[in-house]
Length: 186
Image 1 (tube, helix red, strand yellow):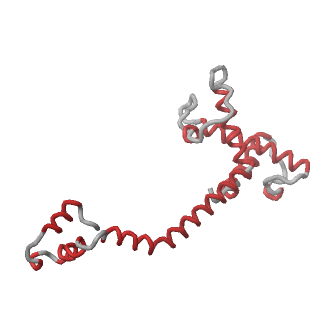
Image 2 (tube, rainbow, N blue to C red):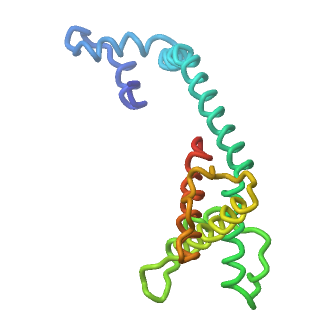
Image 3 (cartoon, rainbow, N blue to C red):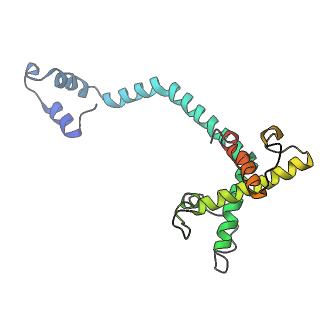
């Protein structure tokens, strides 16, 4: 804790008996007489902690790089962004914002602010429900074709329920719930 400029000036100008000063003031009186003492101490502290700080920064960059790679490779995340863009374009159809090719990332934070008529459902709910439904249809088709999809066929129920929409919803929910494990570094 370096003294303020005023206190440092007072200590420099003090010519009285040093025994009248407290232990901290005596110590600071000696330090202010050393040229650039506090800058030197800051440099020493920086040198002592540099290796640890660099290690932490490298670790943070590695996590960031892994997160970016996961986001680039995640089909489901791309589908989510696409659904947000399509929904925004559909809502803004007929306006100058209607044919957007992209959106700002802070728009994602606003999805929960746009409420439906009931006052409870948000645009985020709608987008997620649509993705769950479309992923359920995709997984069901992939299962019927016998191809590999993002979920294992063991995870799907053996007999499809009578209500196809409910089946698609439950199957899609299994697929979408895997997003967090798909992008765990994010």
